[in-house]
Length: 140
Image 1 (cartoon, rainbow, N blue to C red):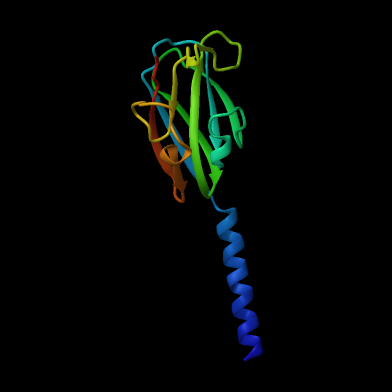
Image 2: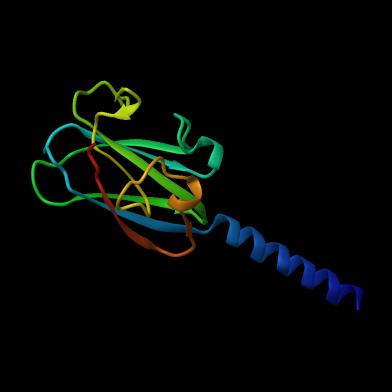
């Protein structure tokens, strides 16, 4: 009986470790590019307290293509994420603001229209399988 319990616990531990290290493809298509220049700066966040600041678990920049769709594909571990991004048109690698409002095109996962500052809860999603999402760039 002890051997059966030990074997069962070992199998549960192996399955848990495999689930924690499983990865999935996240494919993001960005629409509403107003200009075909600059880079898209994309941040993936896993904590609500980091959502609106400069801290991201994954931070990457991808050149905007001269034509065709803007697609970013990442391989990510299983988890809960929120995406925030902006199009850097002037190459200064930061989200510029005027009177507290963004001056560059920006977007968030799960938020096609903005009615005030978004929350992590509204923008977050569970990545448990390969996932495709569309993010619309907004310009205020």
